[in-house]
Length: 234
Image (cartoon, rainbow, N blue to C red; front, side):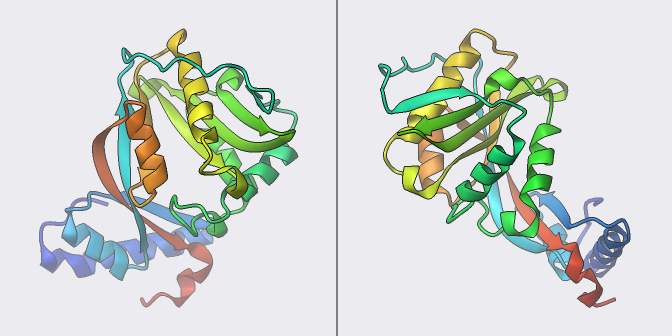
């Protein structure tokens, strides 16, 4: 949306947002999403008046390409990290669904879209390199995922998704998986590594900071489930 120039523009902005949501519904979309500068109060107000809901403030973090990686821990008999086999799509969708349970990263967002749609979005982000789509197996069970793709337009590598199922959290497995991914990138790095994280996700923010990721910018994330668009005022 074009930046608004003051409170007087809010009603017109809200009207545009409502029309965009209704148009998306006619196109059979499931969700409308927006990212807005958190200090742009008029833009935020127009978005929310138009039917969008503020679900999180995202921190965009970046790790310099030249930063050293931590040494990998010794091999552990209970842990195995390997690339995702693209033929195992059903397995990956099931894993992703489990990682969304009690997630602190934009909680509730995954419920607005099917896991199949979410995975399609991840697959279409940048240039897929199957070597950098990693799965973490612990005690014979796949419990975590880390997807990294190249974004040529931004000249960076993006951590597209990072998540663990509930019983695998808080015991150090996230550190092992992230360190493994960064070590892989060290020999094949095509720019800095970037990611977005819900600022309220304290464990993840702490992990990323410990691995050299620093804040670059912030954005307010807003969504609207298009199925309810007809209920919005016109």
